[in-house]
Image 1 (cartoon, one colour):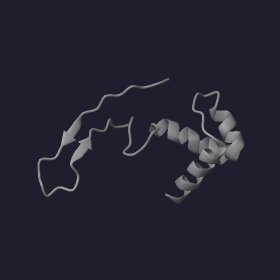
Image 2 (spheres, one colour):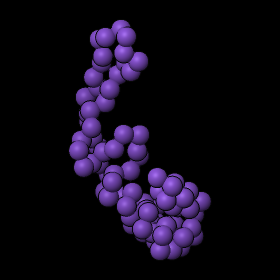
Image 3 (spheres, helix red, strand yellow):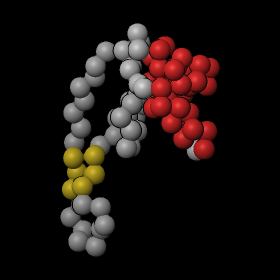
Image 4 (cartoon, one colour):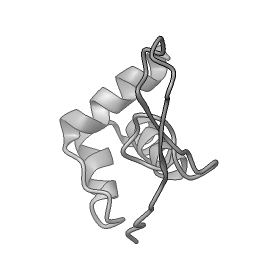
Length: 82
């Protein structure tokens, strides 16, 4: 499934503000600076924990979430550090 989401871009009019633009977040569907939904991220994390690199990548391919084995391992490493 592909989700096309339109969000509002908000502008800060305060000249002292370091952030000039802000993007609206859809709660439960988007997370700042993420390319995956929270549900898909949980699936990638679970595949990484259970099957590691190559196995996790092989499981995600038919689920239409293709990632390389190194990406699965990287996600596993970063999620365990957070």
